[in-house]
Length: 393
Length: 186
Image (cartoon, rainbow over all chains, first blue to last red; front, side, top):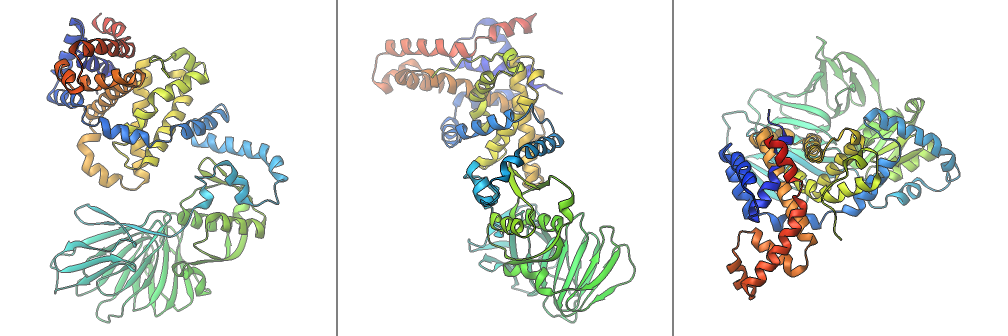
């Protein structure tokens, strides 16, 4: 394969030729390169025209070069330097061990003050959850980026009207059947959420880092979607066509109902039923388990039924009402939820804290520092921000 | 302020902070422009370039020459940009559109070459007095001495003198070429 190194003399030749300062030898080197292929000749013409000069200048004028140098200075001076992620963790841990004596006397001042002093503008702790944004992906592979702020119609298929606005995306069938079953994909980023109304009137609220595959129109036999992540479903009644939710580990059969499904990779899948009736069959099981309202059913990551337990339903589905409630969950679960909602990463200074259990009721749209402060106040776990991640102690 | 165009490679390997900063000054803008070919948002570009300079610091002892330094920076920046896209979950879509452009090594090399030419020209421009810079920019857009003279309303001789000054400055940025040519033609 061609190596970049072998071509690094070319820019100088080009520059010199632009200034008509090439000597014979250089001229022949440049020509040799030009004759390598057509693309080189085109490139040469493009470079000579300097058509992007102003655009680049404009772009460069917006860069925060100074601030980034300052940051880089810190990052490369901190230790002898960090070639891998593991070392970052070790270095961060060492720094923390050294730093906590110092931090101890700051204990009473709030977390927000402590960490925001350092990096006022880019603090992760000011992150907000639940901004409404989503990517809609069509079978042709086009991605359409949407937010609830922009009202518009999306052209997916001539027989279907798709609108985007305050209440998310709404699919409605204009004319009778669409012959081919086209699948659309809706994907929320970390820190995002979105709402969609499918062509049968079912409403689905997608939580952060979630993907939903659905046909633009359901066929006459069944309604079937695929989910990865977390979503709250309000399925429209239709006795002739059952509604199925498939996840990586299980298949849910729905009989007209409201329920919440949480199925992130590497976590067990949890389904909470609010009203109606659903049946769940893990991919590794043969029996379908029926769920009654206010019950939670979990399926492990290998697709095996784990258990059914009674829950307070306001807990797990509170997220789509703009609150979040954790009841007797451990810190690791809570922080992994927060990291999805607020698009931040946590690393643990010690493992024991992961298993701390507690209960929390909060407004979801508070910024992250408020929530972390509350956790600090409740259980004494401390958080500090270091170079793009949040350390937990 | 004038920045020398060559880099003290040994100083860099020895961990000299001023050399490191010098490399940053020389390449920061261009690497951001380069990243911008893949990543559309400004913050993403700067983030990606930041990572590139961290990698440079980590590998500073393995950088053997100025040519190597440049190819290292662009190569790492390119990788970082693609990784960034992966994180943004748009890689699939992007790759399907850009497959022919990014996966092709020739194309990557050509993108670097274009960015490098712009970098050298920008740096030369930076070091010139205003009038001279204006003339240099026009000349680099392929305008003839006569055209520039008419456009700026000065004599052709003035243009020639100013061009000489500019080219002298330009040569400072391309001076190690001679050495390289010898190496290549041996």
